[in-house]
Length: 120
Image (cartoon, rainbow, N blue to C red; front, side, top):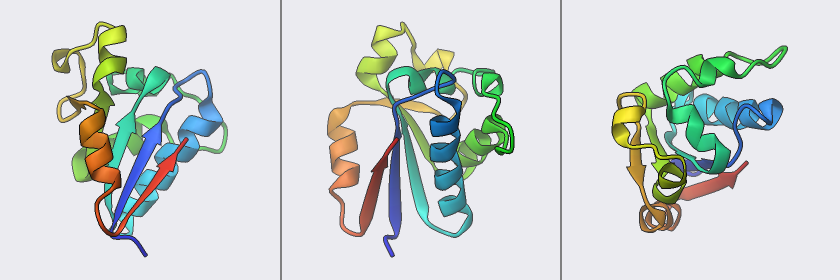
């Protein structure tokens, strides 16, 4: 089993099932002791803004805001630089602990030994 999981989430509230699946997998891995990094890209970038995860409603799904909070607390959550810029977001707009980093940092993470990357 990989010791590090990188989950890239390209969707947001417009695709609640896909978004919740990504958050659930990432949070489950974190709870099982795996080091987790969540990348919010595309419309997923909005989830880094306070209150946005509360807008995701999926029957029988764990609350997205709770999953995201666990990932911020115990893992690493990043918004893509270009995605943030296209939405006029800076780190001041984001949940405390969520950072903005670029493609080079993403590639570095996914190419590290014992790393598994998933894209939703």
